[in-house]
Image (cartoon, rainbow, N blue to C red; front, side):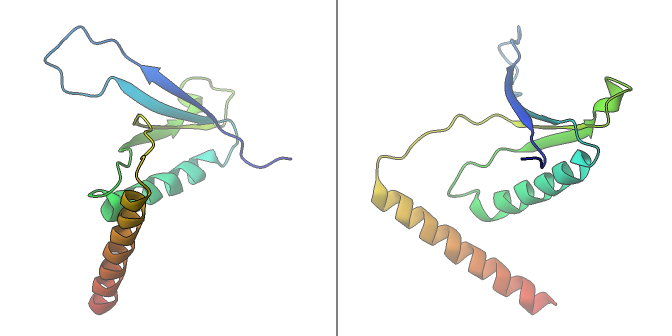
Length: 119
């Protein structure tokens, strides 16, 4: 086996303030490998790219941040990734799924075309 095996968790914070609009559930991913920070840096970049293309069509979690495990445990070289937790839901309509994928593709092609004209 080998590779970068990460452990992930959903963390729920019970807020006493009912007027608070901040999220109360978070997705946390931890990896104990030395180069995990680079992997999580790439994950944040990928998350932002997906949010740009997919936001009107699919709910993509908002990445919040990354950090080194050494701030918690000096002997640990790993890193952590924190994002908004989004509850998964399955669509019951195959036509809707096909339409959504088509819209994402069209939007992506338009964005790629706009970028190529800028360079």
